[in-house]
Picture 1 (cartoon, rainbow, N blue to C red):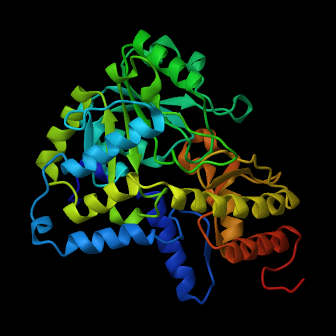
Picture 2 (cartoon, rainbow, N blue to C red; picture 1 turned 30 degrees about the horizontal axis):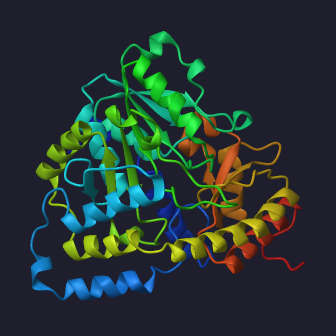
Length: 395
C-alpha cells in the first residue's frame, strides 16, 4: 500500500537528496568524495550577522510568533535594499513578504496561483524545484528554451500558440542556475512585454542577484516600467551572505500576487524566527563588503578551474553571475555517463545537465563553493581519469 498521494508517489526523489545518499555510501566505503554538485557556500556567515543574531536571540520578545508577513524591520530592510540597489520603490507593508527561504516561497507561490491544468513557462535548463512544484500543484510544464549560442536569453519565438493557450505563469531565473547566464534590463523588458501580450504572470527568481563578477550588476525585473503590475521577484540571503541553513528570503513586487502567497503561507507556517529576520535585516542594510569579498573568492577559484576543465576537453564560458560553471562534457559522453564515470572513478560529484531539463544534455554543472585546494584536487583526479590513468596514481 502506498501512503502518499498520486502526485507525491509520481514525483521522483529530489535530485540532491539522491546525490547525498550516493556520497554517504561512498564515504562509508572509505572514498574521499569531493562534492561539486550542490550549491551551498563553504564560506562563513559574516561575523556581524552572527553577532546580531546572538543579541536578538537573548531577547524574550523575539521568541514569540512572528507576524505572518515577517517583522517590520526585515520588510523595511528589503525595501531599503531595493531602493538603494535598484532605485525601485516598494511598500514594505504590501509589496514585501518574508519567506522561510526563497525555495519555499517559489513552491508556495506556484500553488497559490495555479489551477489544475494551468501551464507554466519553465527555463530549460532550469532549477529542478520549479518542475516539482508545478507537478504538485497539478500544473503543466512548458519548456522555455535557453540556448548557449544565444546567451541563455529566453527564446520566446520558439513557443507555439498551442503551448501558450493554457499558460498562466512564466518563471525566469537570472543570474541563472545552472547555466550562469545573465541578462541586461532589455531582456526583462522583452519578457514583460511578452507576458502582457499573452496575459501571463511573471516570477523572477533572483537568488544569485548579488553573486556577480567582472563589474556586472544584475538588474531587477521590477526596474522595467509597469513590471510590478504582473511580476514578483524572489530574493535570498543564502548565497550572498552564506546563510543557507538560516532559511531566510523574501518576495517583492505585485501586491495581489504577494497577498495570494501570504494566504497560503499563513495557513502553512508562521514565518521565520524573529531573531533570524532581524539578523537578515542587518545583512541587507550593510555595506556589502562581505558580499564583494565572497565574490572575489569565487572569481579566483573560477580562474583556476576553467583552464583545468579546458585541458580535459570540457569547455565552459566564464560566467558573470552565480558560483557555477556550466561545462560541456567531453566528446563521446552524455551528461549522465560522464557524471557517473567521474563519480565512480574519481570520487567527484558533478551534476548532470539533464537534471535541469532536456536542454541540459551535453553539460554538467560544477559548483565553486568548495575550498580551492579541493577544487584543485578534483581537477587533478578528473585529469588523470580522462588521460587513462587512475585517480589514485601519482603524476
